[in-house]
Length: 210
Image 1 (cartoon, rainbow, N blue to C red):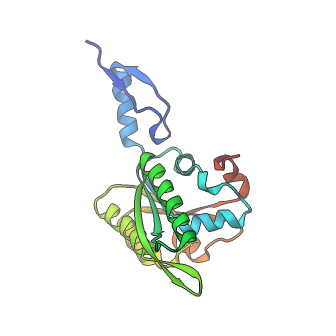
Image 2: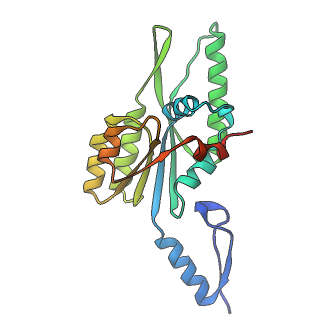
Image 3: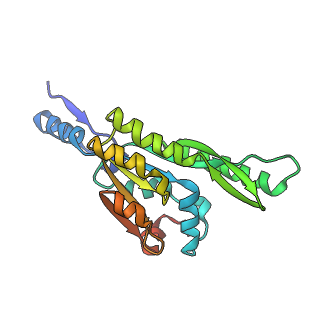
């Protein structure tokens, strides 16, 4: 009897394909041997960088398509989206609108397979400051490396507080790739990550709803 191996459809940047017999097992073996990657997105930092490029309609930004593009030719084992959780008093209309939008975004990302991790927001001088998100991202790097869940991590953040965690996972044989922005790169992350990819506006237009 001929055994059929049915490769995953649309996942991990691989097209749907069907192979039989030895060819099927070879393709399955190569798929399983493919470089494993995780992607960690600092949601608030990424959003503000996109805004600084003059991009609009960011609520509908295609994070899934962006992740697949960044992690091209690797097998994505985990997608993390880290953000400060908005909490609002009943009387604070603006904050409640922001909270509703965030909840809608979180629901959409969860349906796309993202793991959502919350920090918290502190308000001072009428501005919100994000706390605890860097701890979530550092934990993702360290725990994933310890459990051998990835070969390389794509880090979409400008937070230099992550450097100690990056140094530790590098010692464990993992690669960290800094994904930043050409107009506002983090020199510290450029220096401490093995590889980097700096984005410009043209790299991002495809993922913004027209």
